[in-house]
Image 1: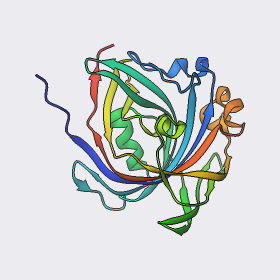
Image 2 (image 1 turned 90 degrees about the vertical axis):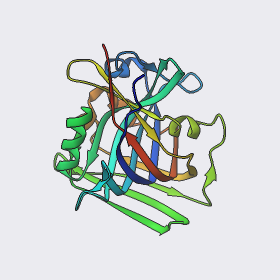
Image 3 (image 1 turned 135 degrees about the vertical axis):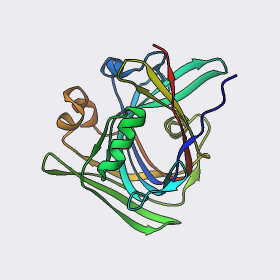
Image 4 (image 1 turned 180 degrees about the horizontal axis):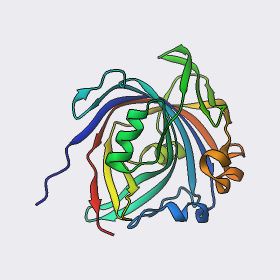
Length: 243
């Protein structure tokens, strides 16, 4: 019997701003890894732009100087895979932005994820218990992009069957490898609390960063937008699955 993979990374993920867009499945079809299929909520297929903070990051238990606290912005979509234990619901990343080249290198080297290092910064308004807004900024192609989200009131537990539950409750990652096989890895975290967005803004050169086919969908208003409080997370070592 094969032993379970060990932990690759531990960290806190905090202040996750999530903008969610309906998209045509045909746009995502070329990115779906082998042995997985697109997941959907109420018959609709989604992509999400997610901006958040890494805190207290450790790789294989070791804190790397100057690489523990940083921003990430990613574009992701949702898949599922039928395993011996049942359906595993996970995410596939189109592209992930971080501010340090070493972080991008490690993610590409060990998971073949499409990471890119760009200048980034963030701004929080309010205190951790009473956040008012979060803003994430990055520069790409000489232009500044941003994701801004304002909230009101207290964070609330996820409602069963909600869009927020669908978006946040995917605990596996899938990445196509260079030989067209697939890597599967587990991500552990507790259920998060969420704030509904009072307003949300996303400004980005979508076609340049993600490709022309994503531009019509990400240029429209999001179907849903919310802020998750986040938690401690564990990312496990990946397992390569045969083609």
